[in-house]
Image (cartoon, rainbow, N blue to C red; front, side, top):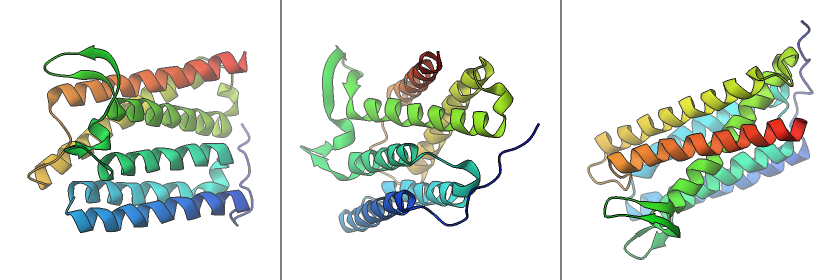
Length: 204
């Protein structure tokens, strides 16, 4: 099986544009988090810096489409805004969007859940892109849809572990409890499932 050759090592204008916007809002929100003493989200800033570096180092080999890079950058912006934009007595992450289900213990749909679904939908799309690019024989197969689905769900579980780390390191966080974690995992799976379904129907 022949593997795709790497593109030119120099970033394109579109890639520089995404990098500039992403760097601008990460630095801006980092300064804001320090200013308001939100040290919980510093953990996420460090994690995001690592992810940005990982994507940047693999631009040539992975050949991410510009629209995918913008989708990833938008996810980062939604995430930073979720923890940094005040809404009432809390932050944007806790804001209700649509009263689908309301109980004493949890609510659906909140900003947090929508961002989880969107973010891990984008993750599934990215994993599908990497798989079909580096293993073109899988293109159009069920494998090319199933692996990104479960891969995105696994990365979603890793995200919850990072949130748990924030809980351990910072006395007061806005991460939430058991119901929040479980709902996050559910919406991660829903977003990933929706993404691979769209990819599958789109290719047909």
